[in-house]
Image (cartoon, rainbow, N blue to C red; front, side, top):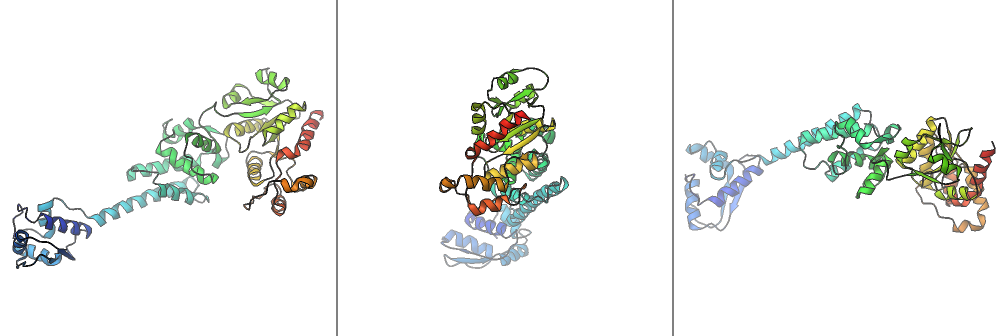
Length: 415
């Protein structure tokens, strides 16, 4: 047989090595070689123990393995091939090991989700599929990926959007979950995995910009900073001492409060009855101030941010009665469901009768009202509201019922 130091058959041994590795290091199947020159044919004849007269040759690997063993030149074709090309690897075996390791990662993640009470949530599968599909875990080892999924499960289980608890600072949550205040900073793998869970929970697209990621954190009840977002208010005063908040309210001015402001003063309404109106559109507060109304009110400005829900939670914990009104459209109903079911607000002119009454008064301009989409949202406080809206297919935004809202806000001062 040819010497292990002979380089004449380099092309042959490379082809054999590739086939053996694809075979899982099993010598079976046939290899066909074309364009053999005279030197290669002579060397192959010595290896195979038979003449190789043509430029084309078919080699049975099992037969070659038996010949190698019989000759005593090597323990088998695998060993002989490794003499020429170096160590061989079992490629199917490697793929199976990687698949098994990945399956163990997801199994560990699911087990942790079950342990923290999230396994049955309807968004879990969409979240895990998204993490898997997008390769969010990156090139992390199975051990690292397992640790990341377990930490993510713990983190998601503690998100205010899941627990309905008060808001939490991102650094505090990171320290609690991972022992590192920066573990959820923008750009970390853990932050990406957790944010994909938030996207699944809120049915929001995964954010592609830093600002959008901050907004998604806010929707989860996690504050990324304390000054970049505000809540628009009128008529709020501090509890025990006069502050700049009292001065602005007494002057009939609106006030934008940051999360840091909420720590500086403990707000409550300027009413002994403890009532605060909550609306969706800032135009309501603007018109209330222009009309000389001094009722206490908070504006969510659409989907409530962390600072909005923080203020609402503070007012509610102080025994304040919160009355909410929003737009009669599907996003408005979704916001109302959140504020009423999760944050304890009372519906304010948000019944089916209120909607139909408004529609009747707006009959002359009904054709100009926005058309509702097909994806209806059931109102948790009134089972008749969504069907009534679906039948009319018209939205009524807060600006169109301002007289009713301002009348209630003005009347509340005399009670």
